[in-house]
Image (cartoon, rainbow, N blue to C red):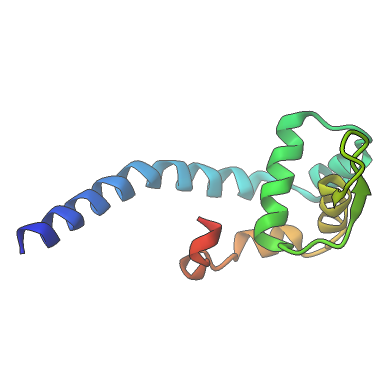
Amino acid sequence: MDEANAIKSECEKDLAEAMPALMAAEEALKVLKKEDIDFLKTMKNPSLVIKLVMQTLCLVLYPNPTEKRKNQETLKMEVDWWAASLKLLNNSHLLEDLLHYDRENMEDTMI
């Protein structure tokens, strides 16, 4: 029983640490507008931070992108995450999908 309580206590501690970040992300999401999405779509070569955020969104909302490109160093085909991101950004329901994403039923591999 002590082990179960220790695990429960650790989980509650981790959750308490994560909740402020989750709430901040939800609030930030609520201020995004269609114009913000349109601006992202105009970027030809976005910063690394934007690319990483969009790749993460793709992994959650569009986990098997078909957009590929040849890596100039390895000459292997790989996922073109920015092309996949643009496809995701063209989803007219993207903001709504993000606001109503069912985070309670995410696959463990997503976490």
